[in-house]
Length: 245
Ligand code: BTN
Image: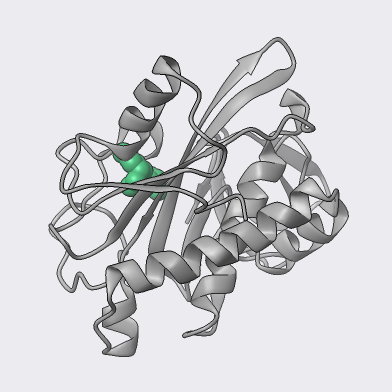
């Protein structure tokens, strides 16, 4: 076992990602160590957003990884791996779990989990990767302007024990990470695509040129989203270069 081989808990922290990075700088953390908390005073989301989480209600944790065999230009495979581990876990309880590119976890059209990756690179090598995961578990009301939050409690009516589900989730994440370590990259790639939200479905998107009808064809190894428009032209987007309407 790598992921979850060691767990460090704090009642509250500013952000598990920030704290994990500061511990990493002081001395190398054992690979797979999980830093978890029940409240963050400055929980961070993607693109400088904040991450809302009521005290004692949700899973908030970061994992330190040393995926040395992965080149920096292929680092998106780590995102695919971790996203799939969360899907495996959720599929124990629910159906219709999707990964909204790049790495939001959706149930139908609602977001149940977010992941903030912070990777440190030395030239074209990954020095370390921090995967920060926020999974909405027992929270029933969300007050931020996040568009479509949901939680396990909202969807199942069940209250979950946070420590129990952290153990199960960390095993599911570890199984996927083993797949990555043993080089089953094409399997991970195929399963990522089979979970991809709106894959191959005609839908509306908006890019710098305007609104268009498109369908998702693929995600490149570098993590860029490929969308085909109605005229058959294929466009590639980086994060935040295209909106899902
Ligand atoms: C997103 O915007 O979707 C990513 C959200 C990531 C939130 C998690 S909660 C644990 C970890 N610590 C943080 O400050 N952020 C991540």
